[in-house]
Length: 513
Image 1 (tube, rainbow, N blue to C red):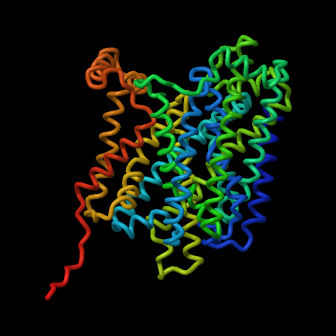
Image 2 (image 1 turned 90 degrees about the vertical axis):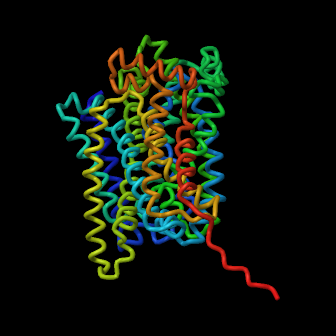
Image 3 (image 1 turned 90 degrees about the horizontal axis):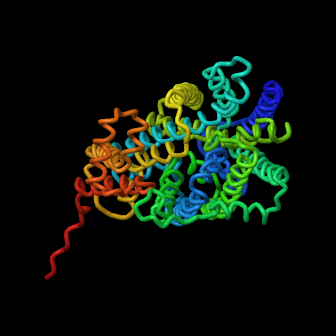
């Protein structure tokens, strides 16, 4: 399949996005960029957020996990659903009651400026690393299967894609993204279904035969009952719930779209619609994974993991049309997360760090100039982070994303939980120290628990790896920490905040006669 042929579809797709961006960003202002003038249609937001929640990582990595873990990933998806219930009926009412533009303003009202800035900073760090890891995955696939043969270097591919994303988010922000996400989610889901049908036809399988063949190879097993394993079902469900609460409910990117809906009821419909749809869509991704492994086995392919789907779709195994559909589906899965992240990070930095909405010394035009400068600067940061992931070159990006989330979203989880669940007042100036100490402790605990993983990633010498493994066996006795890492981080943050807190002051009781 000609690389130039595939690349022409990528640019045609971007041209459509630019047209949509031009149309939706007419007469836009800072409120359009930050919260879509709080006038977004909840149905469009709900549908578009499917793409944002899934991303290119789900499109490629989730099918790749089926070979080793079967449908174990669905344990996490069940947890996601529970997390969305908390978002819809605990967090959203709070955000709407306070009429927030940035959700981290809650921390300022509850604790003070230091906690507010700390929460916003952790969001910026978390979302930057998560979004660029997802971006790297898709850029790398385009590079390997299309652009290497054309002599285009990786850095140029990453830079051009980021510039294109910058162009269609530069003016409209959330107002534009609500519509582009809807378009991209449609392309992704249609592409996924077509690829499933194409591979079933190639294998000459019906849906029932596909399920039977996958079951015979143990691919349809969902629940892991090994208590000590990182994939133990209770760990995965609990971890999935808190990942959703933290990475969606406490994430400005995701909540920025939700609070752009006019009413609380509409926003809650959005979240619960998304929750139910994700239960179904993830089954499709896992089904695709099973089909890919069956197809690879039938054709003698040794490829697995993140490389499996692109190797089959872009190789000479299926039609050229399927290759095009895969590329469109892949970039459609990528950009709802990349464009939304860039917009949300710009909003958070301008509102939370620079205090742009409070600046009375600046007019609307000056504020817009600052916002555009921040947007451009963050695009450069994204480029540098993508190059960092290229240097790391991890073969299972989804594992990296979830682990990074466990480290960086924990302080946010602890701050919001402490604020909502208690009435205690903290020493605001010490909150940053607590939020720095908790992740450091968690990284140490994780390193000892998952000694083999860290020994491989850090390329430790045999002696150091053996010493770390011995320490792990003595301390944890074979127990491996999994997705509950985020919950542990949140609990440590919560405990640290308790230590620097006091009971709220109460008015003196009047003396009785």
